[in-house]
Image 1: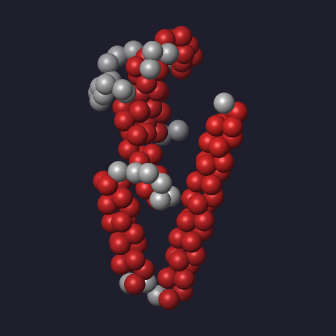
Image 2: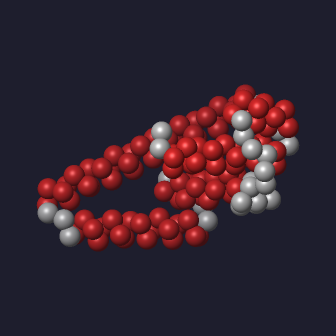
Length: 130
């Protein structure tokens, strides 16, 4: 493993540990720290809920915006900008590449739609079990 990957792995471990601590999962944090030999030094990005939680919140908002579920205006703007860029790039490509890219986009949309349906089904099942 290269030095850069090793450092990335260690940084991820530090932020996972930070997340456990901030979620008050003390036993989990202690076990993770011991098993992974994770430093307990303060993290560089010290967010109130933990950096991973904040990152996850942003990611989830953007992901939901792609599936047409409830999302923020900022996430919707980001998705719209990405679609515009993709269309602009598509018009600059030869027809065969355009067709391949359209097929990839359709496949991604289908997978996202399927994931959203599965999530809805899981939520409905959970509600029925309650």
